[in-house]
Length: 129
Length: 109
Image (cartoon, rainbow over all chains, first blue to last red; front, side):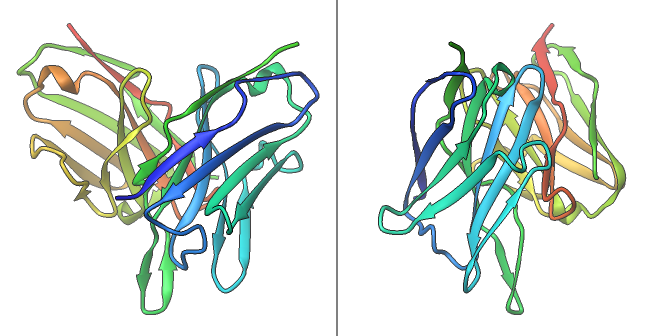
């Protein structure tokens, strides 16, 4: 049974960096089919996908246009987790942050994306001085 | 960029009634890359359906999905008290890689 456990601060000051971690049990961050995603949710933005990291013989990242340039998602293979770093935060980044797994589907040697079948518990992050 | 628009924003129904929730895509997408989620207050979204109408584990058969092209529907045949929640559609595999609809709140009338 795959589980994701989030950790990180719930309060970040404006202009600083928001950092969250998502620990994986029951799967591997180095899986050659899964991708590891961060999503946030706020009343103004709804559910907003932020980006993902995944391993296909090497590490790849994709990021949402809305946060590109401010966001980094990194795998941590020794700890079997992945992290989100969002810099230069403003009150507009206040949201509930979730990590989630896309298990991927392997078809004829290609990995096809899939829906998010496992989610972390969510972390409420407030950006305020 | 694919934008998903859900309607209605809020649906007020009584237990036992039938619920029909809509998700419209701004361009044609394959149902193989459309998912539906249920979210209750204080919880993460829960996967209901994915990839061409595949039902996630533990989802009762009163839930069903249909549609193709740009128009997709989630139907709950007979509402149970635990079905009142917010429902989201999601596309994956296009550009951007993932996007969500804004949600339909299903509330008790």
